[in-house]
Each structure stands twice: as C-alpha cells, then as structure tokens.
Length: 136
Image: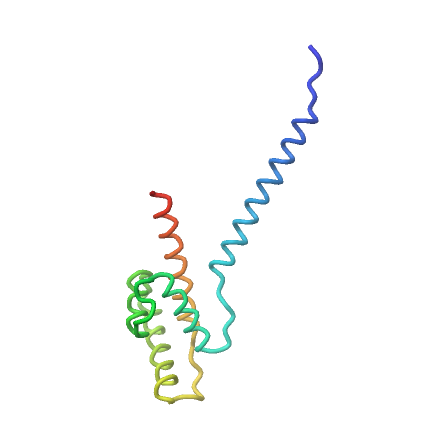
C-alpha cells in the first residue's frame, strides 16, 4: 500500500480553520455593532438613540407616541429593575422639563439609564426577531 499523502489533509484543515475564524470574527464584530452603546455628550443624543431603538422594537408606533408611553412600553418588554426605573423616570422628567418647558438648561441630565434601557430594548428586539425567523 502506498504511503498516504498528508499534504491534502493539512491544507484542508488549514482552510477549514481559516474559514471558521472568519465566521467567528464576523459574528463578534456584528454583535458589537448591533449592541454597542453610543458615546453621547448630552441627553438629546441619548433620547434620539432611544427613539431609534423604540421604533425598531415597535414599528406600529413610528410617528405617534409620547416619551412616557414609549418608556412604559419599553419597560414592559425589557422588565427594568425598580431602582433603575426611578432613574429612568427622573431622566425623563428632567429631559421633558428641559426640552418642552425650557426649565433647567444648566441642569445636567443623567442619560445613562436611558442608554441602558435603549441597549436592553435593542437586545430584546434582536433576540425576538431571530427567534421568529428560526421558528419559520
């Protein structure tokens, strides 16, 4: 029996390894892009990001919703803990006072709870949509 040529096996394993790493790195980069927390310098940008995530999650509410309705719906979907919910409510009150009443222009609005809610909403929406695609 002639000796077996291991070069083909070696090249096949190397090609498979490269392909596997390519797929893994592509998946990791995609996850980072989808679930990244944007760097925001103010509350206006944070609420704009929340609005984008909300519209992805609830496409039926594209144009007509209030901030309070949106945050309440997002809370029902994400199930925010109680201490976070108070921070989110306070951020919303401060932002509405700043935006609509012109009160508190010098007040620093804590937008980190809104960003965390936005990311959680996006994660929940992404996982639910993938589950629905998988079930079909």
